[in-house]
Image (cartoon, rainbow, N blue to C red; front, side):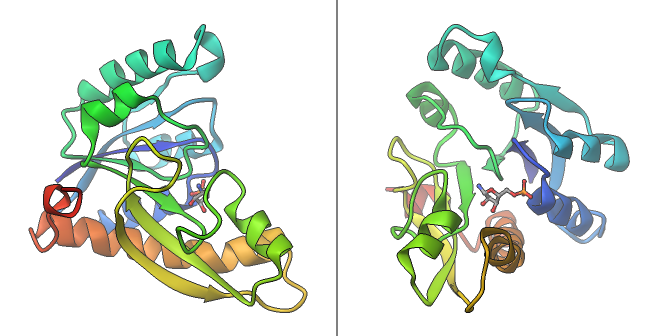
Amino acid sequence: LKLVVLISGTGSNLRSLLEASQDAQFPARVVAIGADRDADGLALGEEFGIPTFTVPFTAFPDREAWGTELIAQVRLWEPDLVILSGLMRLVPAAVVDAFSPHLINTHPAYLPEFPGAHGVRDALAAGVDQTGASLIVVDNSVDGGPIIAQERVPVLPGDTESSLHDRIKPVERRLLIQAVLDIANSHLDLKELAR
Ligand code: GRF
């Protein structure tokens, strides 16, 4: 299974995928890493010998023009699955149309709770005693697509946004790697899920 992973930040979830794919038995390969900015996680391309590309959002007149270039860049790699893993950008409809349902996103909350760019901060602010991690198919809503997998994560007294996020990320990674395995082994059909 050929994967293109899109990031905006450190790419810690991407690192987990890259480490998993070091195992020759793992039925998926990250064929390229893309970003909407000069993301720290692009350095993983160097480390793991994977091509990277950047489509800087700020270099385009609008979201649609950015999306058109992103589609072209992703298509070059002929991926079977595009993974948004810390891409902090809403993709335009053309991107969804181009790749979904083979377009999935990791989110650090128990959707539909706390969608959007600050799921961890919002859960903390809400004073809940549990939040979660979710993996969804990307559609034209904000984090409202079909849920592939999700798991509860406790919020502990004294949690900060980063301590809570650090507890959520390992769960996200586990869900992501399991989903990639299930898709590669045809135990999960995204077309079926997204019907
Ligand atoms: C992840 O929690 C992801 O779900 C969220 O942003 C975080 C990215 O972390 N959208 P990293 O860049 O993978 O370390």
